[in-house]
Each structure stands twice: as C-alpha cells, then as structure tokens.
Amino acid sequence: MNLPIYLDNNATTPMDPRVLEAMLPYFVEKFGNAASRNHSFGWVAEEAVDYAREQVAKLIGADAKEIIFTSGATEANNLALKGVFEMYASKGNHIITCTTEHKAVLDACKHIEKMGGQVTYLEVKSDGLIDLGELENAITDKTVLISIMYGNNEIGVIQPVREISAIARKHGVLFFTDGTQAVGKVPVDVIADGIDLMSFSGHKMYGPKGVGVLYVRRKNPRVKVTAQMDGGGHERGMRSGTLNVPGIVGLGKACELCMNEMESEGTRLSAMRDRLEAALMQVEEAYVNGNREHRLPHTTNISFKYVEGEGLMMGFNKNIALSSGSACTSASLEPSYVLKALGLGDDLAHSSLRFGLGRFTTDEQIDFTINAITTSVLKLREMSPLWEMYKEGVDIDAIEWAHH
Ligand SMILES: *Cc1c(COP(=O)(O)O)cnc(C)c1O
Image 1 (tube, rainbow, N blue to C red):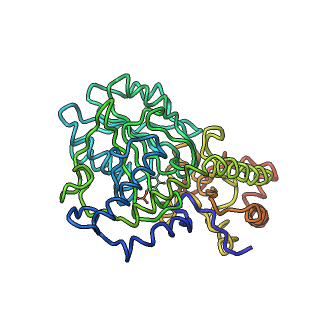
Image 2 (image 1 turned 90 degrees about the horizontal axis):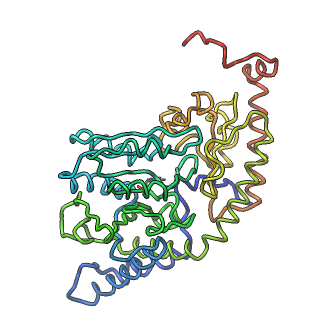
Image 3 (image 1 turned 30 degrees about the vertical axis):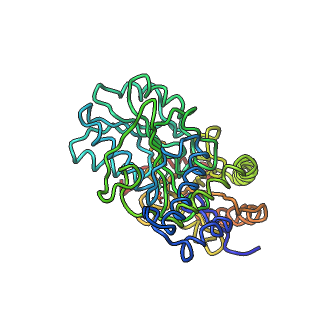
C-alpha cells in the first residue's frame, strides 16, 4: 500500500484516468473554439460540448439546454444568488439560506446584503438539518429565493430537499441548491426534487478543476438569471466567455461515470465509511457530528473529546491526508463554523476530523487509518491533563477557566 492515504475527497477528488483520456484530444488536436461557426475546428469543439452537455443533463434529469457551464461551483453559486437577486428585483429583495452553507453561498449573500438585499440565515438543529417550519415562517412577500445546499461538505448531512422545494413552490419562491457534494454521489433529479437552480463542480466528482455547472430550469417555471459576466453572450446569455472545451468534455465524462457507477459506489463507500466509523467509535468519548441517517455515503465527521484536532493530525498527517474542520477554514485555526452551528463547543469543534472517502479508497487504507487514528488519540490522551481529570471523575465542562 502506498502512503500517504488520501481521505480528503470532500476538498477535491483525484481525476479518474478515464476522464483524462476523454479530455486529451481537446488540447492540441481538437483545439477549436466552440463558438467558431465558420469552420470545422469550431464545429468539432461545439459537437464535443453538446455531447458533454447531454451527459451532464442526464445525470440530474435535466434538459441539455438547462446546463450553463461555469468555472466551478463558486462561480455557479455567485451566478445563482446574484443573478436571481438582480433578475427578480421587481418582485422582492429577500433571500433565505442557512448558516451551514459553503462560503461561496454565505459570502455571495453578504455581498447581496451590501447591495440592499435582505438575507435570512436559518439556524440548523443539532443534527445539522434545517427546521422546515422555520423555513416556511421566514418566507415573506418579498422572498425571491431559498438557497439550501443538498449535501454538506463538512458533515455530509443531506437536507430534506423535496420538502424544501414543496414549500418554495407553494409560496411561489425559487429554490436553489448547492449540489456540489451530492451530484454524482447520490441520486439527484431536478424534476423529482423540485429544484429550480443547482450548482456543482467537476473536481468534486473525479473530473477536472476549473469547470462547473449551474442548472437553470427552463419550464414550470422558466427561470432566468442576470449574467454576472458580460461578453459574447455565451451559454444563452447567462455566462459569457470562451468555453473550456477540454474541461467540459472531462466533466461530461465524469458525469457519465458517476451515473453508471453511483449505485455500486454508494454501497461500497457507505459500507467502508460505516466500518471506519464503527471502529473509531470504539474509542472512548468519540462522537459522530451530524445526522447519521440522512447523509452522503462517503463522509463522516468525528470529534474525539479531550484531544485537539491539529495536534491529532500531527500524529499521522505524514501518512493520512484529511481535514480537521473545513479545508477552507482550517488555515485560520478558527473552529469550524458548521460544527459551531450544530451547537458544539469550541473544544469539540477543534477536536473533529473529517473523513472523505472516494472512488480510489480501499479497505486496506481504511484498516491503516483505523489503526493510526486510534493510536494517535490514545497517545495524546495519555499526555493530556484534561483526560486524566476526566478519568478521575472531574466534571470538566463545569470548570470555569481563568481566561474566560
Ligand atoms: C467545493 C465546494 C464548492 C466550491 O466549488 P469550486 O468548484 O471549488 O468553486 C461549493 N460548494 C460546496 C458544497 C463545495 O463542497
């Protein structure tokens, strides 16, 4: 077995070699601009993009015309939120989202607030799911959009998307979902799920980086977004810029592979994840964060009380690559805002590890990981005065620390 082991597939996935193979002809040999209508170089590129658009649409039950290619999910999230906010300004200026969204949603919402918009940030329950009653109560006659993610990148919980869309429908409000962690991993169907707009990204599903999608519904209702980039009017006027043909071809192939392999991969990954989780729960004072029933098959997030996540990582990060808290926030050493939103204290949030399994994860790697993490936790606790106090029966949560 080769080291290090990669267990950070929620941050990015390695590209599947079959995706690379599909992309290769489109760099040198078939390099045309898909918008060149006057010659075969352009036609060849356009044909490849059309084919990829079909592959992408099929995975989510959409029509190819509803697929807008972007540079990734961050751009797609910005386009959905700002694009709807601008397009539907005459109807209202209110957006509803929740506190555990990806930063690409939260920061776009902050921007919208600066532009005069109103945003409601719903809190989540201790299992990470939103409260549907609170969602419905938050809707006003100025609400234009509900933005709730499909699957969470840190804890993997899957929101009740169908119930959310039914509420949105009932009130004539559009529903956007960040599908980046869910698309290709679990069945997502824009019709059955009642989704009006959805973002996702190539590099979270074994495709290339720098390419993503915004799905924009074309009927029942017909949804429009104001372009955030002005230029040649590509992508039905919603996203200008020369198309990233090799990237789009790769994303199409990635979608096809996910479609064919989703069911068997889902079963394989959830079995491996459950085995990892069950073994790590043998460690005393270990807690799984977030709802364990409604969640992605490849993710678990576990807090090991009385050890510090960063210290824990030092014990094994030469051999195992994973995240403590979110990849995006771990640089700041702030405890994860997602875990804090579940009601975890700083200590439990800091002591968490996110395991993101993927297509290339093996049982052997899981065995190694179980062993390495268990050893690391036990070793750190052996040196921890807090752990010693806990074992002596001191109620640590009740202690008032001097610096508070
Ligand atoms: C990774 C991620 C994004 C950002 O996607 P990029 O394509 O890297 O811009 C957005 N939302 C979620 C839930 C993600 O996991």
